[in-house]
Length: 146
Image (cartoon, rainbow, N blue to C red; front, side, top):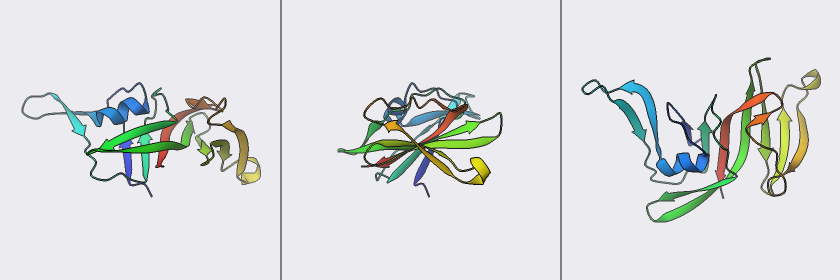
């Protein structure tokens, strides 16, 4: 489904924009020769239509948009969804953002296992904060190329 899912690894990023500007993450592995911590560097040849950032347990700022530079071209990505994990009841909920900026809360297992969607505002006018949602902590942010 996704062209690319980036995991934060051992790195700490202030924001998604900060993360994509470095295009690298530190791993928990060490070099066999020098024992230095290894790092993965991403080089994009093409702009994928969807990018997902996985950062469970982190308080990375979720930007509404960011730009990705590939060679001499700039590609803009807009927030499409944020997925939250509620550890207390082992449950996943999400915000879904439509093209016009409407933000909707989605719970696929709400009352009587009937999926529920609830309007929560606009991305452009007092959007909800995206770090937490109804007892869950943000774990994945999904962006679509616009």
